[in-house]
Image (cartoon, rainbow, N blue to C red):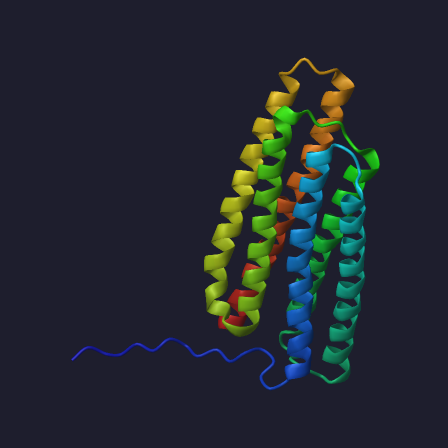
Length: 225
């Protein structure tokens, strides 16, 4: 008769500390909201080719999300120290929140740069810009899913992070194709350079998501051991 090999049962990180668990859930929800506002904002700009009220509204929503995320991050940090919670994992949790906060910060900075500089993007490139935006958003959303797993099911983190790497690779592929098409066009050089910078502003989000995922994979391994 074969042996039953049981999977290690890893308890949720905060156990019965529901209040701080709720704060972390809200923090992760806000990062996910930022993904949506960024994608909708870029789409609104591409559809109109100028800064509409909808574009401005998405910028304000991103600012509000960043402010709330910062409040939550600081509140969580304070509670972890003052209540002496999870001393063995405290540093990893705070680093993870910092990595994720950087992503919402990048969303705001990248979108703000685009609506301030308002590049004139030829219609021929609209679809590629939207495709690139969708792919970087998927990479960030998947990091958020992996972060949720870290707190409850750390052994599942690896599966999610594999998808982050796939999305980041695809983002790079789209960005390279887009920049190649731009520089092969008959546009003036200064306009080509402005469009290239716009591509890089969006593509860097996928790179940041992959970096956050790499750090998260280490935190998850430490939890599982």
